[in-house]
Image (cartoon, rainbow, N blue to C red; front, top):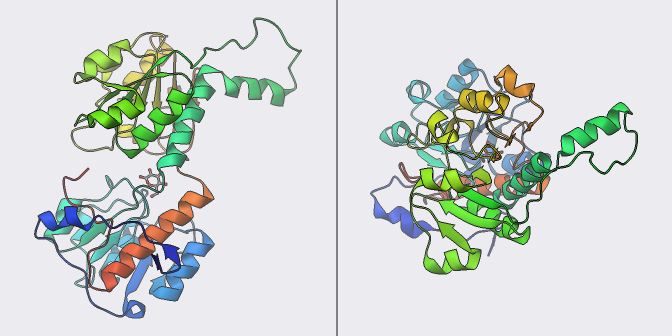
Length: 354
Ligand code: 8YV
């Protein structure tokens, strides 16, 4: 059905009925005051302005703590992004009106969902719409690392290319390699589909094993032991969310289990890998390469990592397509509008869900 000028995804309300959750407020939309923490694509900002009493951001800098505190004090709904830390200390400053954190993004590790819930504040996110873009970026990173694309680009840009040579820029073929996907949710499965087309053998580790039909469709082999999987793979792709139980899942001990010819790709969250241990191993030649889109300490990247030739580093752009950003905006709109109409947002995040 069409709603708000966009196609509404099927609401997965049933899963939210399990618990005694807080419902939305029944308020006319234009009375709802919405504070947006970052610049969003024009189409999204315009639609937000048409529907709600919106405070948009002029600058594209993240809000300061003081600005965030001011926003949570006065708004009914905050639209944060991954660059805002919505922790207990900030939520303690929330005004009585704040009832929804409609995150612009799928990952919610920057939000203290438990504290929000205790304070009667709902949290929603934007799952599903960045799956394909992120999976595309996993493939792009895999190819960039194994086929040495940045080195090729650098030699062309420097004007130093002297012509073709049989042994120049030799990389490795993806086809036939074993890919171990860590986290087989939507994005992990989208990676599996793509990698299978490239001729890779698909393996995975996940909290829960997939249903047999899905494993069969993906041609994926399940490993209950992450250690055993890691030791046997040529490429590892991190596709699990960052939670207390996935923090440093790829720690020094586990990274050392990887083959020295192994490559690791991370488009999820930097905290899943011990970045210093990874840097040491890449420098020592104990790992062949890495393709990273996310970092353990945000923009504060280990400087040694930046100097390495066997890594491809990207500035958290896995989901950065205009189509994806607009669809994320549509999800945010639907979550706020549904909430304003007195219902639970379709993408409500329940504590412990991820
Ligand atoms: C988003 C992401 O662009 O959705 C996520 O969790 O990591 C990104 O790709 C970002 O979070 C926007 O807030």
